[in-house]
Length: 113
Length: 115
Image 1 (cartoon, each protein chain N blue to C red):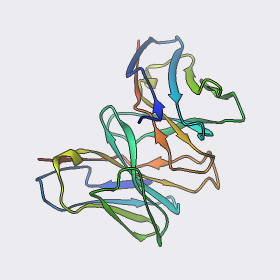
Image 2: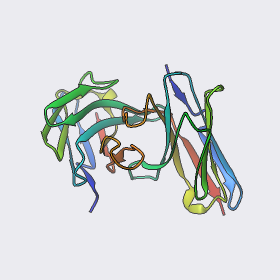
Image 3: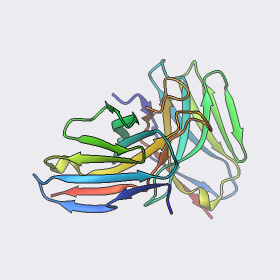
Image 4: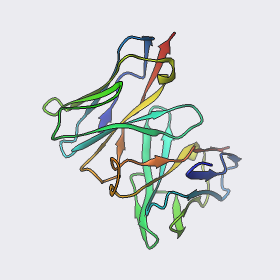
């Protein structure tokens, strides 16, 4: 049973436009959410996180939105750049500091120059 | 040099062979993890350790064992490898959310193929 779902395996976006990556979860015990970015032949790297007490967290070009009632979060990248081309994983945890993360299946983002 | 180093990076082996994947870290973190990535399944937790004397099973520990030889070293063993253990394996560390956003720091991965 996939508790964290990323229903779009891939996404292509024009450079300079907004990229929106979506993630849904089913476990209501999840309280803390993270996004990781992965380039080929490298390990995932942390991008941004959000606690369930917030509905938005922003860090430069990256913003994560959380809709707890819908059990949905999204990552917005504005403006998209070629270096953003990577696989993005959504992950969830029962609480901040609990690193037993449940990962989604990933979305491959391709930025078209 | 990478903060979290995995060896080997690539390994091809045969069914029934014993395989060890090693992980070492220079981040000074207490907590270490082994994850497995399969196409279409994301990353799944195999084992984790919160300190040298602490070992815990994750979601998919069957067929695997681990050893925490020191704070900086955490190895994953496949006692008798089988083809469905063909996957990309990641080691990760964390500081238990004492600093930062409580995130994991991953190694570059070890690709294992079992024929």
